Image (cartoon, rainbow, N blue to C red):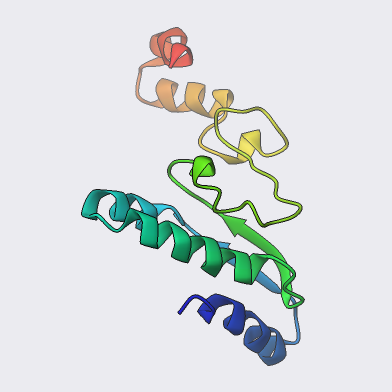
Length: 125
């Protein structure tokens, strides 16, 4: 099972003739479930091996993008990976306008619902 993702990528590359762009949404959900249900150590080990096998030194991989609810950095799931860039909604960076809403978008939404006067309070959040 741990090799399933790393095995899939070359098959996809051969089938399409293109490097694979791997998108995994909420990769941390199984880790949270493992914490709640008592298999935390096993799932973090599995996820580390499953993701590293697919993302590290994988010639079929063009790019990988993973999203999560909470950053799971302390579990060192990604310790074996090179060229890892982490972007988040609380940190300004090149993708800051790609997560959530920009301030002009929030102002427009508040105005649409006759809540424009609450913008200073919303900004504090």
